[in-house]
Length: 210
Image (cartoon, rainbow, N blue to C red; front, side, top):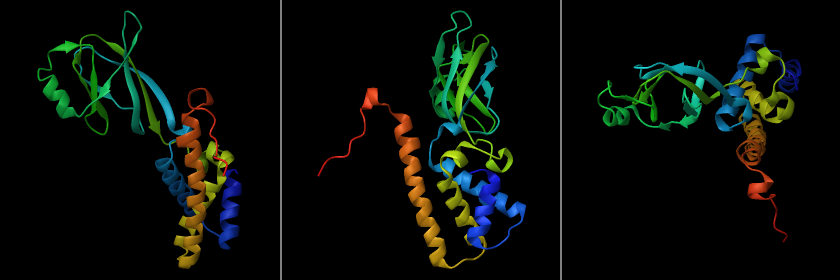
């Protein structure tokens, strides 16, 4: 389902016309709820950068929601070294003298724009961070993985917002919430289940015969 089809379905089901701004709001809020509920590949991205010698801070990627992993790359061997996530207070306690330098072992979220590393880097390291970030909305992209592969969750999520906007009857709100919950359950089975396993390691999922 592309965005044009989504807008048409919302208005047809609600039997009301909405402005483009309203339809975008319904859709973007639904996407935000879905992506905050289920871990999907569309959320995953990575970025390379550098952390310079004597600078214990690393700028966060724009739009980062959370970290999957952060690594520094040895400039001599090109070996990846993955850092352990710690609270900034731990890093300050473990490395109280910022002039003490070495290959970073830990990182913490120092502010909404930067990480703090410990110990302070002794040389310049390349970095690679895998992190979660909201993908481009179907509102601007026109088509997305969510719209193409799991439009039931997106449509019902947007309908909940539209029905509430209309001040719809409680039973109608409850109906779309139920349909949305059913779609999210199936999506979680995919995103948090099947996409995190494979048959080689976990075997094929089997339903017991009664």
